[in-house]
Length: 126
Image (cartoon, rainbow, N blue to C red; front, side, top):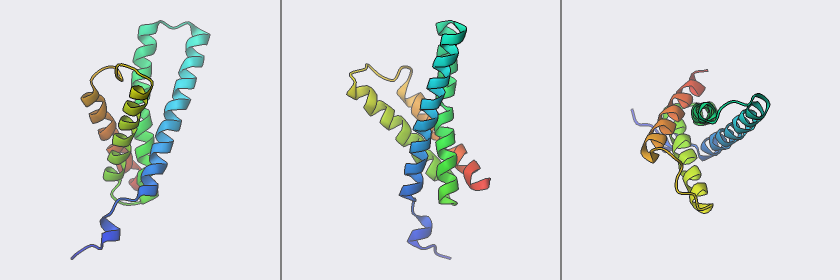
């Protein structure tokens, strides 16, 4: 049985919604982390660790949004969101003249892609 092109194609609007949610999530987490850091006086190494892990909630949430919006192929929509998220962060880093995103770009891209794919599968399933 052959599927039509509309059934096998990615949904760009779902991916854009996912990327928007990913960046909104990242921004809200950064704001919350800043408030907590200012109020509690946590040490920088601990804040860095918390920020690192919180940053990966963004592609997970974006992937879930894309999967739910597309209602099919959640893993692929979510992976596209994760990849777009990392690429846009890389472009933003380059635009402001930063040396890099910190850590390994390949590791960060792989994590964002994988978490986006998991989020996409959850978005379709839920």
